[in-house]
Amino acid sequence: MTLIGPRRLFEKEMRQYRDPEAAARALMPSDDQFLYRSIGLVVAAVVSVIAGFYALSLADGHDDADDGVSATEVRAATEGLAREIDGTERLALDFGYSAVDIETMLINAGKPALEADGTDAGFTITNAEGEYPVCLSIDRLAAAEPDWVELSASVRAGSC
Picture (cartoon, helix red, strand yellow):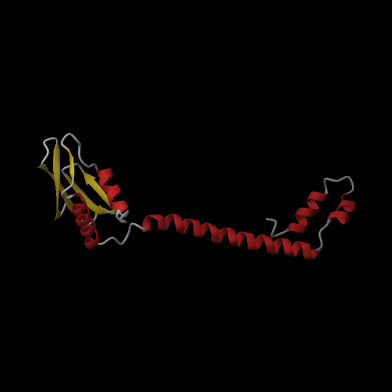
């Protein structure tokens, strides 16, 4: 609105004074000031629009980071987890791994775009869209010490 008729708005504001003509002569900006103000407002509007689109692209791009994880990458990440878990020992009373534990291990391995679902016996690892499921099975084997179990991990295609 101030871009279209700033002089009219200014003159309307001057009517509130007792002597509007004297106030207008004393306070009226020059034509150049109106021009620079209008240019400044146009530039500010353009910058605001560009910043808004940039912020939206960042917000949309946040989820796009999960795209592009292939079946090979899901399988490789799951095999890496299996190697990490295989042969480790835990207390026999320990509940084992949870889906959160597996996802934390994936994040630590540099694969935050993968998701895990399941229980301590088997987890289905997929990309963020739920595609390319790979099963990570965790078995408990007897360990050398009586209160401990050794974990054995295996990987197979498909859901658990």
